[in-house]
Length: 428
Image (cartoon, rainbow, N blue to C red; front, side):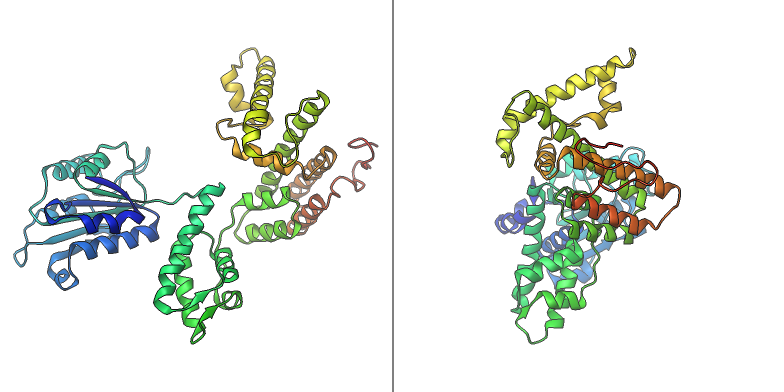
């Protein structure tokens, strides 16, 4: 019948006639939206005063296919309308995933055949799951005979993804606050997002707490957020590496401490920083070589479209030359295997995704090649220190982060080699 996005539910069901009501609904995606969508569908399909006899909810061990089939196929002696809900069911297991009881391949085929055949009149099956595979026969069957509601939200770090995430959180604020008559300042919103990250359920729960905490006040401010909301956000490691690439020492130190508190090993963090510095060196080296060749490929604050048309083709050409050289190091090394084996020496390891490469080039303008080289050498020294268990990891990490952000990495005398940076990268 249809495949909908979460925001289209109300409009679709308001136009739905009784004779075209679905007999199966699949809701999948982000858990907060799935719950909201489920509540909407339940309200649309069965009145609250009829749920005692006309609604059955299957969860945990009871939510298995044999039980689902038995419940949805059984006529009710008390009333003709029946809604059966099976929540958080593994309908689309991935390759190698252990088989859960009641969800064998044959179980899934049986469910698909029953959906194709149809249920007793005025019986509705609602299924919820966190993930779905649109290629599977079961998904296609549900879509063709019932309704699929897509509640997914992009989880990536691209600006477009973040915009969608923030829009969802703002929608949550609007829906919750309109019941209370209170306002949330923009600073308070940002503070709440910083505390929770993109976790709609936790975000909404904390907003409810803030409403209660505010009491008779009409406005919730950032001070209120700081007073009662605990930080639950798990910062991705790229937040730290981005902060370092932006030379934002304060932000970098904050994310470093957050990652340490979350259980990240210092060597994991160090490896991520090292990888970021290497990417910046590759970009910076490419820029400097193009300048030497008098090629106007990159300039500061270049826009993305110009980068795609001017810089990206040259970057891909340079990477291909590097791959050919790498393949020549081993006569048995094919170009295809070289790309996988030597991806760390490529400027664009995934040329189909140009935007992250563009961001690297923008951030490379914050450094000189000498500063990056100095940072890379000190990262190597710190790696040795951490592996030999000498020094306090958190202090050593913080000191190096500050030096990278303040352009002093590589300028100090080195205890084991006596090197100091002068006009060339390093000299004795």
